[in-house]
Image (cartoon, rainbow, N blue to C red; front, side, top):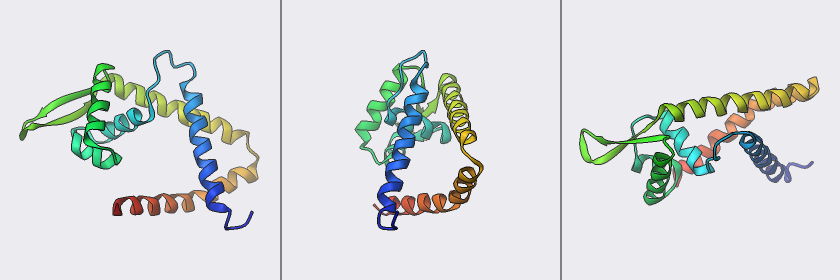
Length: 151
């Protein structure tokens, strides 16, 4: 493969891996699966308890009303709490419920186990190649993050 083909091939394989992980993790959940944007918001709130709707919208690059809709959906599912900001009564603070934290831990554990199982099936050369590629992938992610922050 030439270097000109690398960006398309890389983005395709990364997207495909992520899609397959999501599909596999949905199987056997025993509860309705959350949509991608719902999971993103839930993960953001869990990582930043007390984040506001506006800050979450900015972080996720979504409109405020879209985040409000997601908040309402997650509240109805018992996964998110919305509390009034004591410093600004017009603003709300978003907090994960214990159920949300439990689900996120479960998803993380299942995701890691799924990928670990697949990585272990690879040959030693492939595992070494993946490990060697991680620093470059981290730099790629940092570059993409910088580009997004410029928007």
